Amino acid sequence: MLKSGNSGRKVLERRGSQPPGQHGASVRRRQLSDYGVQLREKQKVRRIYGVLERQFRRYYGIATRTTGQTGAVLLQILERRLDNVVFRLGYAVTRAQARQLVNHGHITVNGRKTDIPSALVEVGDVIGVRAESRKRDYFKDLEETKQLNRVSPPSWLSLDAGKLEGVVQTFPSREELDMSINEQLIVEFYSR
Image (cartoon, rainbow, N blue to C red; front, side, top):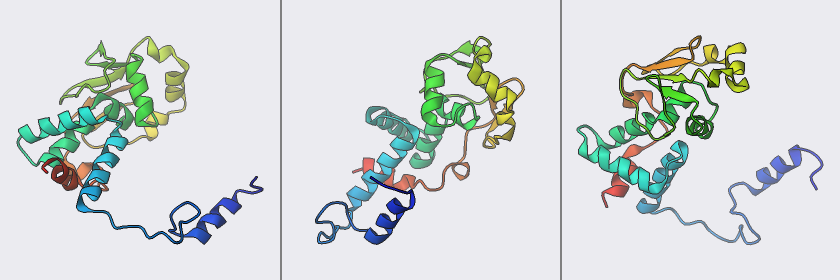
């Protein structure tokens, strides 16, 4: 049993980059192949957005048929998902929580209740919280603590914290998206 919170860190400092297990020190890690690097990048993006493989492949197919750079279009499609927009507007702390808010019917798109997290928003769509849902403690706390006023949504979204509404101004550009994603590796993975 660990006595303090620092002992776990000390073990990690001693081990360094050694693989786990009894024989970790004697085993050399192989360098990832090109395929492995591409697969890891695809899996990382899938995990970030909480999308299953079949849906991700469908989004890739849409991106290849759309004009523009396939990787950038793919990321734009993923950013336009309703659960991601709810997360970006600050209604939820995580994408998983945003997905649950949408699934439970708390979110409206253009005044209509929507419970499909994968719905793609368009320019001019108004994303808000249902009037019935505003009475719930979760949304009351959002308003009372002024948490939404502290959230700065990306430039392609605008937020009216008082009304609990956000508007899609434009589609996101590649420069506004997460820079740690190398979408070219994903394109290479699927073009094998």
